[in-house]
Length: 333
Image 1 (cartoon, rainbow, N blue to C red):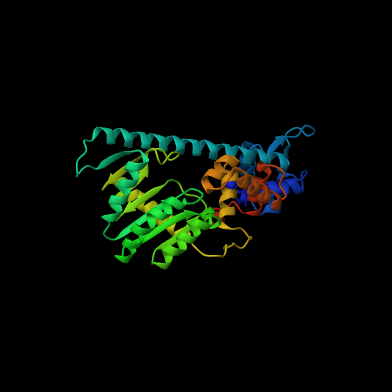
Image 2 (cartoon, rainbow, N blue to C red):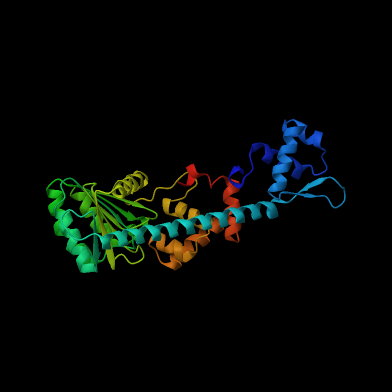
């Protein structure tokens, strides 16, 4: 259960035994856990490195276990700090990639055969998207983050969408789960599915994106301001990677429908995503942005989940999740 915190099964067994029987000697601990004394010594060394043991102040040469409330909380906080640092490195890499794409786009002269196009301004982006969509031969795939489509955007998209679907083009769109609570977007999604399109939702999306025939990708220059500028990628290796990202996300997305699907613990996919983000150290503001909801809604969801875990802090919530096995990737992914 505690392998996520660096404790293998042997270490956990030794730690539990020492918590239950703090006065037990090495041979007694070995007999209790079914290990050799050398194996117990190796586990003791590992527990000491994890700061779960300390020298006894009363018996020289003896080791005493640190209580789980202190020792495991500290391990969890350390792990969360590592996750946050890793997330920061990912975000920095995204910025570097976006910068390189923009720099390369500026260096390539405009021509029909160019591999990268730079689009500036919302009008230019929408006009180019409409042109690409009209040229589609077989499939259009879309990541559509945000709290919901505006009435103007929906009205503008309907005629082109209908034309494509009448032509037999496969249209697959992924919205955020929060779009299920936005009546105009939900009505639009159901209208699309009535014409043969496929629409699904996920708790969060990494970026706004449109894929045309799996050979052209349109992504924003700045994910935080997708209307300012965009990049059109033609036939690059990155298009293949983005297509794989869409396919992977599609497999885990839920088809649009009236009912929220809950797992064996009574959690919706959106609630599982909140737990993942909470234990990764994200703020309510970041959670709100990833889920496409208000900061107040994100804070309410986090508070309700912490209450269900009987936790008074996010660190304690993470500890209780680890205790219950809810942090297992197979359970929360």
